[in-house]
Each structure stands twice: as C-alpha cells, then as structure tokens.
Image (cartoon, rainbow, N blue to C red):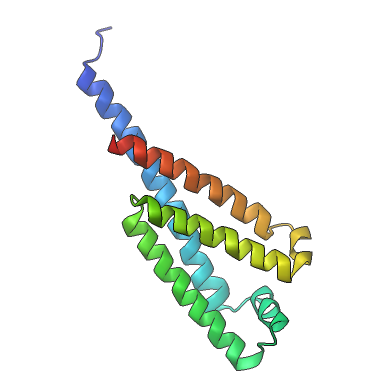
Length: 141
C-alpha cells in the first residue's frame, strides 16, 4: 500500500473536525430551537407555568411570558447556528443553559427527581459546548 501524501492526511483530519463541529453546532442549536418552539410556543409546558407561578405570574401574563421566552430561545438557536465560531457566543449559550437549570432547580427542586430533568439534559449540553469550543479552536489553527 502506498503512503498517503501529507496534504491528503491533513484534508481528512480537516473534514473529520469540520463534520464534528457541524454536528455539535446542529445539536446545540437544535436543542435551543426545540425548547423554544415546542414547550413554549406550540404547547406551553406545565413545568414552565409552574415556574412562573412561583413568582405569582399566572394566566395570560404567564402564557405571554412563556411565548416571549420561546421566541428568545429560537433567536438564540439561529444566532448560535450562525455564530458558532465565536467563543463568546458559545460561552454565552453555555452560561444561559446553566442559569436556566439553576433557576428551575431552585424554584422547582422536585424536577431534579424526574426522568429527564434539568440536570440530565443540561450537563451533556454543557459538555458539548466545551467540545465545540475545542474543535473550533483546533480547526482555526
């Protein structure tokens, strides 16, 4: 078997990293999009309403606030998808996820016992953010 040229090896590595970066980018943006669209805009989730009721926000004001939060999360999804190479955008996304998890757990601690809870959904996403940051730095160098 003939040895591969260095340029071929570098191209393969770049394609592998590029694919990983796009996969991570799609997963993270997709999660933001889903969480903005489904449990907030299309079918306001009971947990979202329960969280707002802790602050005495109920009824129409609660639904309006949930829909606004959904719109913001959809904007975050598109912003993240477009600006994923900006470390500040990735870090802001990770911090937002962490803060949302902390608010949910402080206001509704019983959610920590659920099967798919804020901890089990947020921690893997935070890890994906870290991997994305490393991959983007590697492809840029």
